[in-house]
Image (cartoon, rainbow, N blue to C red; front, side, top):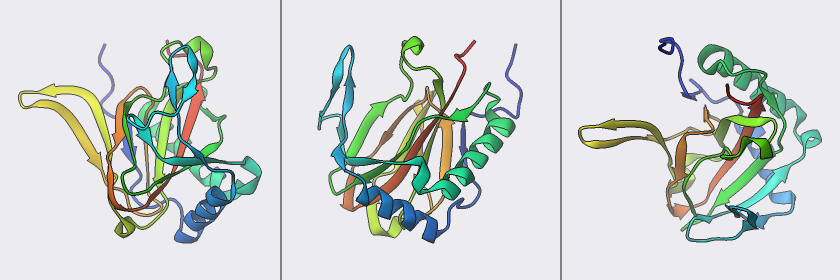
Length: 199
């Protein structure tokens, strides 16, 4: 059985979904909430800081502090899921992560879903990255997605360059990374949406 032609696992919104003012609201909230150094999963061990894999500062945005903007994002996720993903029972069940990548910051290749789905109900299915600041404020820091296809010239990877307020929704099982920021500071909002386990 082949997937229908309309199905896609990575969708960039055709235009920004948040205004510069709404983006600034998230930036202000992200910088007000406690910021910590980003960690990585250590298998069975607790999460740990590993600057060879991930280097950034993060905080978490409470649901009650950006209610209207959260609703806008969830509406776009539901529309993208209906039109492209067709995953079951999708919902927002995790706080948005505010992330700052200063000069030298990056996040190496990773996926957003645990191999053992029993440890993460509901299962993450759709990930979202939304650029909060003007791309003129930094260099590098591109989101790069590997979609699993191989060509005669090697693996097929896609560099995603977003406008301020623009988002990409993609399958949480896709390998992806954030390239090193060479100048400035990249500010982004990351969210995950889950549903029932894959069948």
